Image 1 (tube, rainbow, N blue to C red):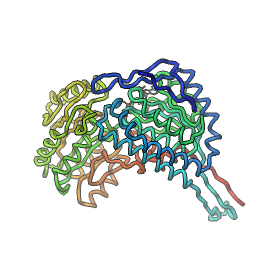
Image 2: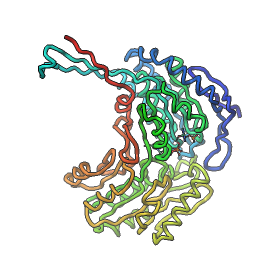
Image 3: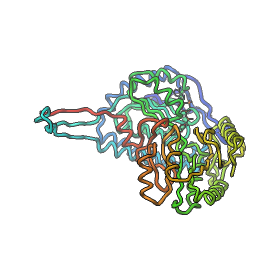
Image 4: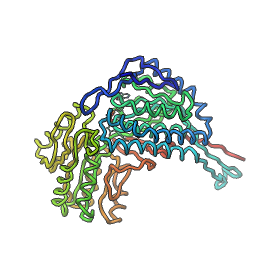
Length: 473
Ligand code: NAP
């Protein structure tokens, strides 16, 4: 199998640091071979990005929008190929892989909208004596070269969330995809180049994380935008204390079920999708389910049935929702955490068996709050039921986490929804649905240990631009 080349500032090159072999998370077969950049190639990409910054900044809004619109069309035409890469490298169930490919098209389309209508603000400064007779115009200018690092789990859609807004903002990007799933980012590079992105505007370089240290410290990158684990993200921020950093990190998302939640069977089915879809390998996967005592028993029954009904196995199978974990080490860790939860007094209501790298959808009850399946990010097909005696208690428990990405609140009482919106320490409250729900244009991101900054093209555009003021006499 020929190795895919890496994309360095408009050129396709062999990886000077050798070839990465990508194994299927499901059966271990080698599914791709991809070139890996060495330190010199990474340095060359950084220099090319710095040199391209004025070229990208000078692209007109119409020019940026046209590139993104064309890229969206090209990706739409190649979405089956993109979905096949997601199944092969990430082990993503094929139906969910198709959704990711469609969503990446949406991200590019929405980025084109953002590009086409640039921000321009005006203010009459005459309201104070110091500003008498002066008008202010405020536009947004690109911050300059962006260093982007992305995780394995949404290797197309999350890469689009970095590249689309960067093109809209006029920033060159050097992107390092996850070593487990590098090919979708290279596909997107090919598409953006074909869509007319100037050379130097983008490099996509699979590389070892150790080799990234020089780029992370390189002051020519004006923004580090990182999506991945909290541990790595906060560690990188320490290195980049003097420049902008956007961090999209992990969580242990909660859903709150109130007695007025509606049809408990439907709620359980929805939460099963959020907890077990793609084996729970989403940063907003349903992990903690806080259920009011008035409906606890019937909900537990409904959720147990819903967990048992989720088809697990081969990601290429159209029926499968819960595919493999990304690798054997993670399958072992997840089953170990389930075992520890049971040993500490928890009750396993469904699943938790391991077949190769597939762990069957696990539902736990009565687990002590300090267990990793409650307190840490499982990033696996595991959900935990927690009994609550009031809505206020449920809100307190949602906040009893070092993370805060999104929370789902199932109630038909708008007063409770408003209260949740006021007090929950999360980036977003989702009413009547799982915390896993996301539409790509919306502002998305976390508080506390889950990160800083927001994605969604309009929000990421703000991270990638800064205000420049003109005062007119
Ligand atoms: P990860 O281990 O943190 O890796 C993420 C990326 O960082 C990979 O490209 C990795 O490269 C790279 N990396 C690791 N150490 C590095 C270092 N010292 N310097 C520079 N780069 C380094 O995360 P993951 O396992 O791929 O992804 C799962 C995590 O991402 C979960 O915690 C999940 O919650 C989070 N996530 C968050 C969001 C969000 O929007 N909030 C979305 C998706 C995922 P290698 O692959 O080469 O190691």
